[in-house]
Image (cartoon, rainbow, N blue to C red; front, side, top):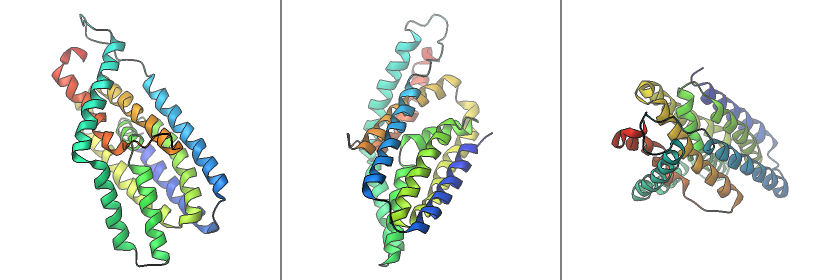
Length: 245
């Protein structure tokens, strides 16, 4: 079923944010940190599992092995895509958008808290490869990544909402527009993307998913938003080097 992952992700985050905001007492930092660390490990596992996806078969007479082509595409895509992302500085633009939203809705006191929760959760749930990679696959009727992301987002949103309030629940609408838009776009172009292309996009996105997890653990401070273009580079490489199709 198309868009199932996006719908479930939206509904779960909205409900978790509302329930968490009703507590308003906050979860002890020791417990919240432990839960978020556990979710980070799950994110890393999802990324590793995605990387291990079988390489697509190559055309008859291909010079390189399927496994080697898969690795080369991941390396080139990450390098080229990150270069593009750094030049555009997607991370900076997203933070600027967050500051703009906070300025518009924050008028001190409670509203300031609402803005903080909204911005923090919007960035956490939307700026990352799981959102983009998952939405693209959701357009193809495969909601697995977004369903796994839903579990992580739900727990994280609930924990954050107990201290940041209803703004965390409002981030569900950012998620719906963002992931839904990507999934909708994917549904229009799905017939133009070969199955091998989707696989290469998936394994490349999985590399970034691992970094999201290590960022959550505090082991790295990678700007994963600047790596987002890498997910789409495999399609360019397949056009330039048709031997890998």
